[in-house]
Length: 120
Image (cartoon, rainbow, N blue to C red):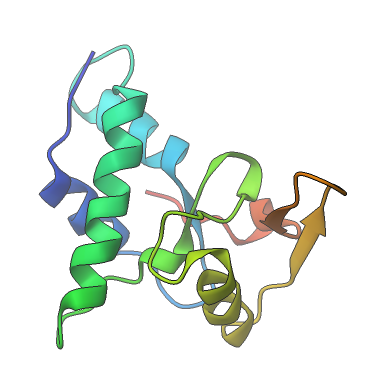
């Protein structure tokens, strides 16, 4: 098992150009492969991605496009600054279509996110 530090998540998340997307799982797989590990620890990965988002949000310059990093199956991340509404707005500005699923436990996803995945 590999534990990637938050700065490594930041570096990878900064690579994603406008119109492209990543998932936390893709980042984890990349780190595991790069470091000869079977997998990257999932709990800290989620925490560190959130740390990257909040740190970027608080910076005046050198923003990390954290909104382009999605949870599993293209789900928006409620723990990002402004929640899913802010992430939805930023993704739609970049041309993505965000859909709502569920009736009581409503979740938001990027429609056909697989077509926009960035290759690490």
